[in-house]
Length: 130
Image (cartoon, rainbow, N blue to C red; front, side, top):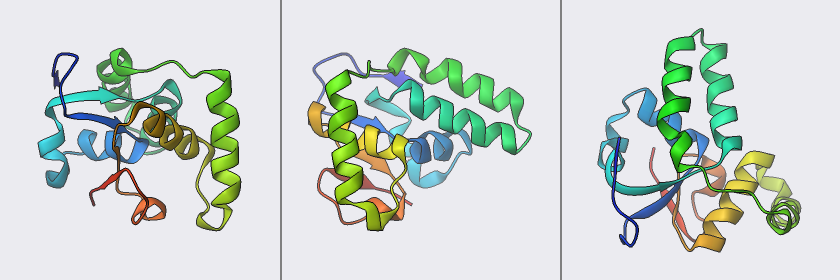
């Protein structure tokens, strides 16, 4: 995966859905496989890794982890608090802890949240791709 240098206008926060869509070669995610500045977290890698393990895709899980690890941003304590508030406010959407955290980080970075998760379909600052 080729990443743009810092300063590009094409920065996106890749949630677990986006990571898995790329691993599975989903065509709608092809435009997001090069020329983008990728941001994600270890928690998103953890979630995607686990889903790949459930599907008996150990090799793909390891490759995905190593491929996206350099793009992980730190999680700050205040971000945890903000994410908890966001999740509570949106409890009817059944947003996972990891997704609430990722969306909060995307908001803080002013980066679009790249996902295909229906819970985020009409939310601001979301690049919704199925």
